[in-house]
Image (cartoon, rainbow, N blue to C red):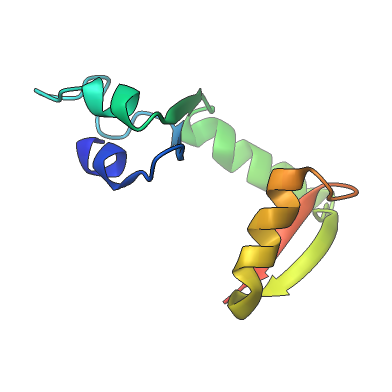
Length: 97
């Protein structure tokens, strides 16, 4: 977590999903978040059992995500710009590698 915070650019955003490395940041000076200034967002998701049940339901019902735009990796900047501007019409923006 500390390495992720240190890697943030000024004004950057760190999105945390789950707690795989634990709930604490051992001996980390969080003032670097304030000095950048950066945004830290947390998101809680279900456990592995929930994830597996969801995937079985998706497969059983043959559900597919709705994709708004697909960008090649060489145009990743455009994908991020579209996301930042909130101009995607509906759902997912995909970057193909």
